[in-house]
Length: 195
Image (cartoon, rainbow, N blue to C red; front, side, top):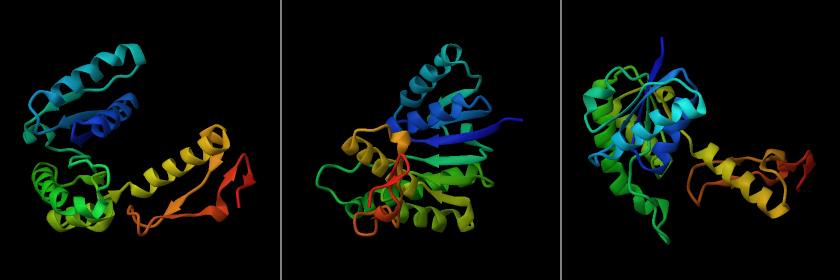
């Protein structure tokens, strides 16, 4: 039996996540967004790429939460993007309202789902999701550390002029400027320490 994953937000992040999930070939994907036509168009593009890329997945684009019912995982990418000069903390009030609404609707239709949060500021949005859904904390996952580590590895690769696959480096802490800590002492390129 295939797993069902709902991706909330059909923008660049949501569309990319939906494509990567669909490409596994064992997950059916529902993309939902408040913008009429956006998730439907992206879902159609993804579905039509299946014969070319070589995967088999059911991909639905919708504006109706009923289509998301029974999802095993809900990936939340919705929210207002951070603008130049804006801190993650300034996003808090606007995105907290969006995440509250999204999580309330999602938990009503998929009460057994695990929530994966990509909305910013990510750490605070995980807390909002936990409050709204009442789920235990192990069912709400934030992806900030993974994203920050990927960015750190990419910047090192660019600076050194090597493949990102040769870089091993990590960022710990919260997904904010104040709490993000790149672990320089363990950063390596092709097994050679940078520090």
